[in-house]
Amino acid sequence: MIATVVDTPHLNRALLARQHLLERVAGSPDGAVAPGAVEDLVEHLVGLQAQNPSTAYPTLWSRLAGFTHADLGDALLDRRVVRVAAMRGTIHLLTARDALELPELLRPLFVRGLRSNAAYGPALRDVDLGELAAVARDLVETEPLTPQQLGARLAERWDTDPGALSYAARGTNALVQVTPRGVWGRSGGTTWTTTRAWLGAEPASYGGPADDLAPGDDPVRDAALERLVLRYLAAYGPASIADVQYWSGLTGLRPVVASLRDRLDVVRAEPTPAGRPGRELLDLPGAPRPPAGTPAPVRFLADYDDVWLAHAERSRIVEPEHRDRVRSPNGVVPGRVLVDGYVRGTWAVRRARGEPTTLEVTPFVPLTARQRAEVTAEAEGFVRFVADDAEVHAVTVAA
Figure 1 (tube, rainbow, N blue to C red):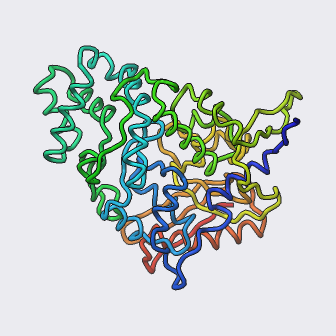
Figure 2: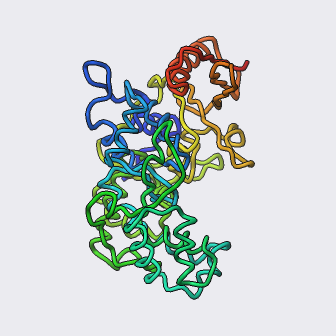
Figure 3: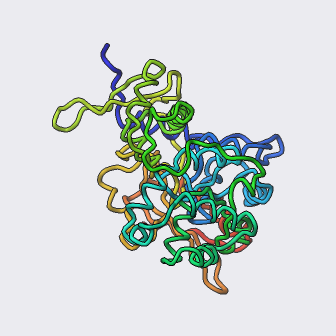
């Protein structure tokens, strides 16, 4: 059977549709976010990358009609969502249910990183990670601790770098960043406890902190990995095996995907410029694949929005000629602006004492009159959001 060929514009619209970037999730009749909508969206997207405490707010504002800072702040304070390391070993906003499973499912990734980390690996060479995990867990469940405090306490037992010990504790335990960390306007420093202590439930178990656990070693974990792949495709597909491995940080997923093939559609990306067949992509039957010409509204997306980080090959969202414009050689990642579905500019907020909060938009290419009007209209709503609804605010769109 010849696989359907899906070109880049179709992949773009499929991604936007599944990300709720073609149309926001509808609110309640009074215009507010519907009850449970924050958790539903966070779970649908399999978490939101959130190492910057403010990242999740524009991520949700661009996808949920009527979203306010309190919608997420309350969910964090009520422990319906939490901040914890997950995909790629980075901090994510997860629902309570996912926080009890995904960090444990990804544990081999974290532990492997501990041994290979150039800065901390040598200091951990003679440390029993299983013992360290248990000691660290007892400490933070007795009293939430900052990374520095935890490292110092662990160094009383292991005579090595406290920073390495703290890093190892994070890699061998699911450590929640407790509130008010991540709450808009109240965010403080990182303080850790375990998901078990914070959520009052036992996390999933997949054989302990081993770094050599591969698909096939644990049928329960294999089933969980299958669910993860299916959820990824629902939010980011069609996609390749390389894409799902890049997004998750896991390797060796080919056997997991092979076990799912009879439940998936197989399509191909468009041929390469050299005329070779395009990459094989997998998808859920019946998942949204809107026509390439489907209108795509302007959207302001956060610095670490997962649409930038979900694929090994990103031409479906960032056109090749603009890739260098969205890189961050100095480590400062800009917010991006979607125009007609693609990244065609960046945004930044400028604040100065006595001056209005200003949203500055810098397009990569000249905008048409229609595009400029759409960018300005969306920016007017977005600047009120980032300025906490202050009466005094401004928008500038560079030529």
